[in-house]
Image (cartoon, rainbow, N blue to C red; front, side, top):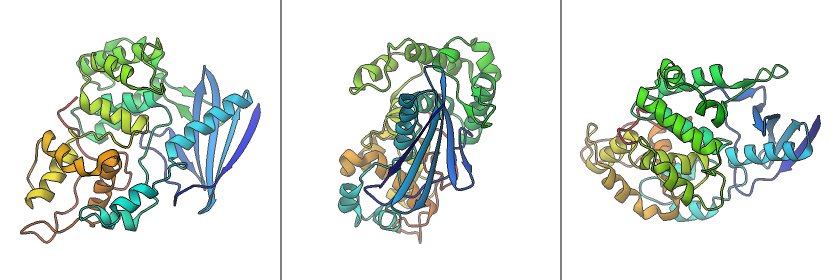
Length: 319
């Protein structure tokens, strides 16, 4: 086994957060730990932050390249290398999210180490509540994932494993039958490398996935933001955004806007739409939203899994 250690100085304020709802990324003491696989070989990665300006990544694998690959994937997931100064300078005084930006400059989009995980999570979350979607993900991990006896950690199921699983078995995990077929089709595209989720140009992969029945803009935007690191992509059809933006725009706690209205609301944030959306959820959770017409406060709204700092939200009707 090869062990590798890399110390990183974040270019922007950073704080190591907790584990993931699906149980794959776990907090153990002062470290976050994750089991990954590269070409079927296990890679165990741990992350600690002993000081605000020091983040240490350690990995153990069969080879040094595999260990370095694991560290790169956790660096991506934590966002430790993201320099968000341009976003902060542009929106620190924004009338909607400015208070949250100033209060939590260290905030990051919570990303999956591998884009396939973000895609499969988005497919599970279509049309259902977050808690139910997480329960499905945990069942899939337990039944189809890989466990490392030395660490007690689990890795999620490989796309080839999902592609080879009978739809009835996926449906037995509480995945809707149509969603099970969509999941298998997407997994087959990724496993065969017809869709390369790590490609420098994601557009060909997005177009191919979009041709699969059951995959629409919301799913692809969730993949782009939470799995591929595109801060300009916003899952605008998310029910949490439809309701939250409705509250802000109308002052009515029961208001709900449509997807085009949400996209128009976030248009001023340009290349930072996705991050601005996460800050909007954070602002809602912390009571930092501006006062709405006729109300003392728009009140807290459901948050998305990526924030980990607010209650989970139901999914939108969009695919």
